[in-house]
Structures are given as C-alpha cells and as structure tokens.
Amino acid sequence: MNGITVLLIVVLAIVFICVCWYISTSNRIKRLDIKVSEALSGIDVALTKRYDVLTKMVDIVKSYKEYEHQTFTDVIGLRMGMSMKERNDASAKLDSLASELRLVAENYPVLKSSENFAMLQRSVMDVEEHLQASRRLYNANVTAYNNMIVTFPSSIVANGMGAVSKQFFEAESYKRQDVSMTNL
Image 1 (spheres, helix red, strand yellow):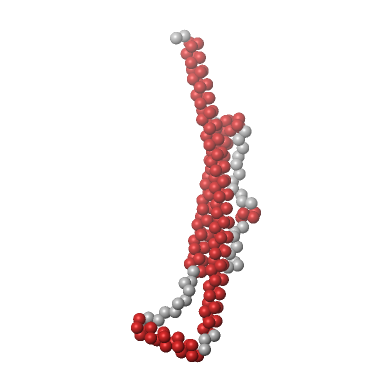
Image 2 (tube, rainbow, N blue to C red):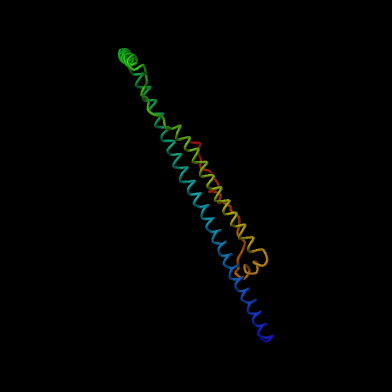
C-alpha cells in the first residue's frame, strides 16, 4: 500500500469516528431532553394527585364528622325524651341481660371520623412525598441535561442542535398553595 491510501484510510476512519461520536452525543442529548419532559409530566401528575386525593379526603372527613355529630345529638335527644317509666323499664331489661351475659354494652354507632382523620394524615404525607420525589427526579434530569449541553466536547453538538439550558422546577403560584384543611 502506498502512503496516500494509508492516509486516506486514516482520514476516513477519523471522519467515521467523529460522525459516530456526533450521532451518539446528539442522541444522548435528545434522550436527556425526553427524560426532562417526562419528569416534568411526573410533577404535573403528582400535583393532580395531591389536589384530587386531598380534596376528596377532606370531603370524606367532613361528611363523617357531620354524621357522627348528628348521630350523637340524636342519641342524646332520644335519651332525654324518655319518661321515668321508660328509663326504669330499659334499666330492668339491661340488668337482666347483664346477669345472664355478665356484660353491659350500649349500641353506639361505630365511630369512623378518627380513622378518617388518620387516613387523611397518611394521604397528606404520601402525596407530599410523591410530589417531592417527582421534583427531585425532574431536577436531577435537568442537571444531567444542562451538564451535557455545557460541557466540552458535547457542547459542540448541543450548539449545533440549538439546545438551550432547562430551568429547574418552579411551580405556578396557585399550585404552590397547599390544600386547606382548616375547615374540618
């Protein structure tokens, strides 16, 4: 082989390696851009979940609280309306049952509001953790993307693609507000 052929093969190999590197770097920048978009969508999903879950849970807790208040009011009202004879008859029946079963129990409705308040607290913690995780994922992807487009030599490809830095998460003002639970 003569010197020109060897030189031509070396030049073509260098050009081939450069083209492969350019395509590979370009594809990596595009994949990182997609990951940033996906992570941003994850924040929207978490914010929607936060709004939907918490507003529904607050409504459920309010409903149970109102139901239990009304039930206790009704039970107390019924007892207050009993005549002395009705109270004596009820007491005699309970005494006879107590001697047979050795147990006296009043049939109060099962209280659910305390369980609902606990469930609401767990839901708040769950959706807030999910939201924080989504924001952290987004910011990590933005960091990787921004690092890729500003560091040499990948910045050459990024400039050729017109890639611009992404901003870290900044919520809109109405989405920054937490769901109010003060009216429970």
